[in-house]
Length: 170
Image 1: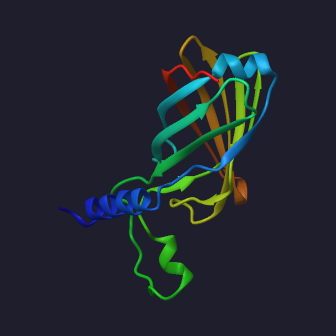
Image 2: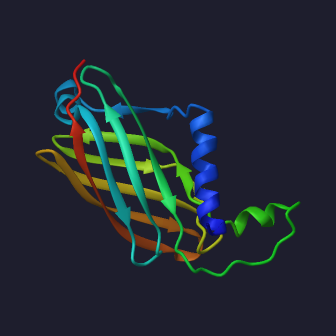
């Protein structure tokens, strides 16, 4: 097994051992808008500009004003890895492992979903970036775009989509 394959397996074991529980994200929405989105959702996102892609999973329960979920970012494969001293913060910057990103804000208005991810260090620019996403509910799917912005005018666009895998009850 390759080093990157071992790293992914190790990450899965660590997350499983810790019984990972996503942080609740407050929803800014009416009760009827939340009810429209109630369920378990999963899907993917990708950006040709950044080369990043990953998975999206979240759960919304009717009658509750919070959602639970996460975004797992997978950096572009084959990118340059710079040598760095493992005892310095520089070591972290060249890691090519997936990163778990936290959603910090979600608003729902009439089937339109928008939100932001916590700031994170992007592996391609080694700069702190923010991501804003927007999507539209169509039956049991949500599709949309996102924009990642960073210092010195960095702007990268991407697409995302999720499918409802289970309708949630109260």
